[in-house]
Image 1 (cartoon, rainbow, N blue to C red):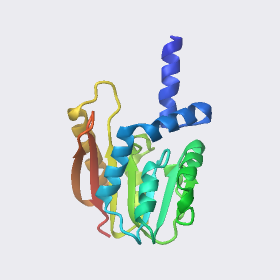
Image 2: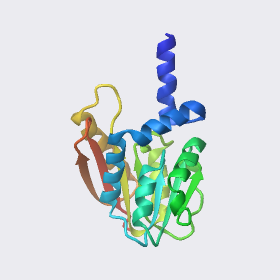
Image 3: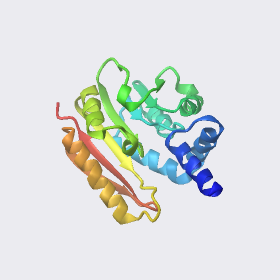
Image 4: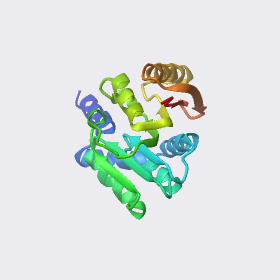
Length: 205
């Protein structure tokens, strides 16, 4: 029973890192090769341009944030995460681009103002933990300019997850984006174990 309780507490740290356990979880996320491949792949799919204003929701240790900053060299990169530990870790990772990167300790249901409309939004393995995902996506769509892009990615982590699990996750993401008013949806898959699904959409305005 004690072992089961410890395992559950560690799993929770990956959902909401805090304290020493959260720092360990952050280190694991930052150094796991599959995590890096997944994040770089999603950023590639989003086709970030040098002048883009981009938001990542749930940035964790900042892997994708770093990739975004390397591409939006004349733009602005924002990130929100509900873990203060991850904000600290990702801030260290992106210190060299601090003039273009703003990381905020906030929940997705309490998003701050980002001033001008955004060009792109992404979330990698985080939308499943949002309160009322359809409403959150409608709010995110409201932050995007007409024609702005969104990318939602999911690599299922439940026991026994396989290609079928990923296919179901992709359908769920498609349904959420459709309900939120996004159009031009397309699904891409990265061949990891289990596979990663990324659903991309456009704000029609």
